Length: 209
Ligand SMILES: C[S@@+](CC[C@H](N)C(=O)[O-])C[C@H]1O[C@@H](n2cnc3c(N)ncnc32)[C@H](O)[C@@H]1O
Image (cartoon, rainbow, N blue to C red; front, top):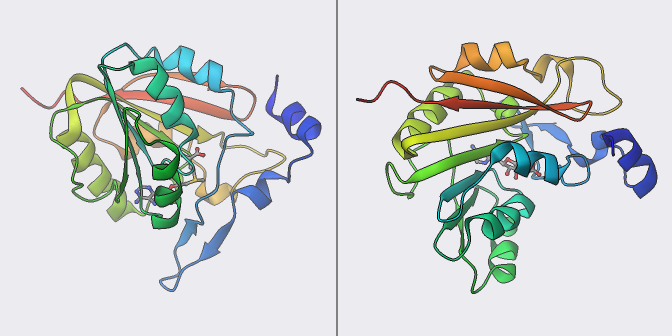
């Protein structure tokens, strides 16, 4: 089902309402912690991610944690899912929902050094978060991604396309796959279209060893 049909069928508010932006005191845009759940095809994302049993995944900027719960099923009892977000209220809510599972929900900022273990993450998933980072945050994000990824680990970034769509952030905040590749010193492994309005781009770190 395409994203627009989902919106029409569900009667949910336009993405402009769902992904609200505001000016912070420093004049920088940031999200208020909204979810892309109604706009992305979970099945298509999971199929492209090809998560394996026993893996450790990180849902960075997890929001309500809907993808963390999907990852939890995929990695199984021998795997682990970290759900990270700076929004304390959201993480507190998620913690109540995930008691007794393999999900660990943490308050944290992926653009700084987190409390997560080094070289331990097979997949870092970042959905609809990257475009809000400042150039300084992008540098910090790259350092932390490189610290966290296990050998052979991958980073998957989901972003909205950089063209006019019926919803979404202002055009000057959007990033094409080429923009993403240029802003990170990581190797782009490829881009997968996610419906009409989103894409997912994979990266790996080849700087180590
Ligand atoms: C539009 S929401 C997307 C949530 C979820 N990934 C999704 O696709 O539904 C953006 C999320 O990024 C989080 N966020 C913002 N800055 C962050 C940072 N520096 N590190 C980690 N998460 C961050 C926000 O709190 C919010 O939950």
